[in-house]
Image (cartoon, rainbow, N blue to C red; front, side, top):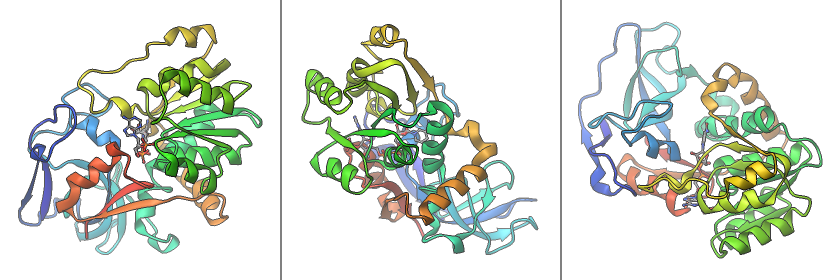
Length: 334
Ligand code: NDP
């Protein structure tokens, strides 16, 4: 059982020495529990936050523990009749070949015959798709004809948000890094306009958003924070809603970046709404069914960036921060 351990807390950007791959025996089944053979693990920006010793919505990963991750896998050994050997499950486990899990909580059975790949339960049908769906439909509540601005738009959450925004009748503008990602926003995901933030300073970014959203931005779906958010607030329509979903620009930053132009939020009577997908856990079945329907109807495209091998967990994880990932970043373990 290989396990990708957090050896020390990263200072700024993680380095290989912050992690350690060790091998030990496959764990025994606990009373009432299961042992899962993990096949795919989700690599998420949130894991960077869990590596810090900081107050958050979840406790930090203890040093010496494997890096916490959502996985999909097969029950390898069981002492629970509801989770027989051979059953596919998804759950909050770790970057390791085998995980011990106690059914209940986040561990749930999944139907892999209904999907193209079990990894779909980590992308469109998992937390990423549900984050886009509930963040938009329940928090932002966009109205047809409104302008939706999405940052991190070519990523897993952002690309789903933009496509759902189109389904809901919005004009959708995306911000992403580089010409190729901007092309994909338009051609692959159906955005109305795409803006490359990497080749623009503050004023140029404000100008580009203003040009793409002449009537002002009604909804911001924020995945990035930092300088991108500081430009966005100058483009808000009155009573705009900002769904604060993520702040990846500052996850590796020793000092948090904050929002210098907060006055614009006040002057434009806008709302900033912090959002966590975990709060919608009792509605995952409903959201998953809607996402599955849109996927099967061809209304939604969900790309996955599948990397291979626990031994590559570090370089794979860092793709999130270099922007190398093209779609939901997943590590194939088995
Ligand atoms: P993505 O697939 O979007 O990958 C991360 C992307 O972020 C990169 O490809 C890169 O794209 C961009 N990025 C990285 N560093 C920076 C930076 N310094 N400045 C600007 N952009 C950067 O990841 P996810 O879709 O999984 O996650 C997107 C966001 O959603 C994250 O902030 C995450 O924490 C958040 N999230 C929040 C949840 C919640 O419940 N609130 C649940 C799930 C995710 P580019 O090339 O365009 O720079």
